[in-house]
Image (tube, rainbow, N blue to C red; front, side, top):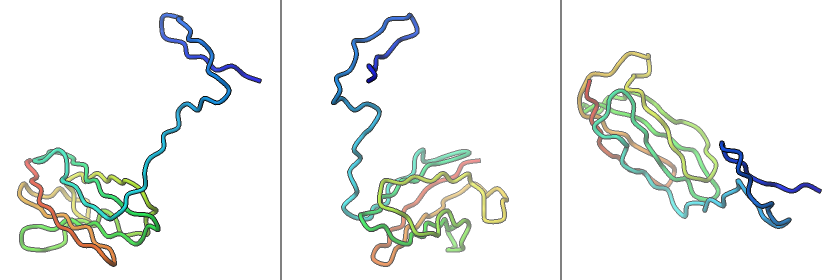
Length: 124
């Protein structure tokens, strides 16, 4: 049997936990539907984070970045994904690894049953 306590930098120790206490585990709800969220920060330089949700059962996800002319700039995700809240970072580079120019870009999340496109701005 073990007793779990917490100790701070000053050496202060907490009371032991009870045998039924669970620590360090959080119950994250599974999203009910696909969702794509606005990137943050926006505008950005040099990186931005794009969040999206995948519902129970998961599925094949494609997340791509396009320029204003509709040309593919970067494929961020093209894979089967398990359910959950996801995030991916775009570093402002294209599929060849070259830096993309300052400007407006569109990112699109596509699945078999969902498509959504949002706008972001890269400032160099």
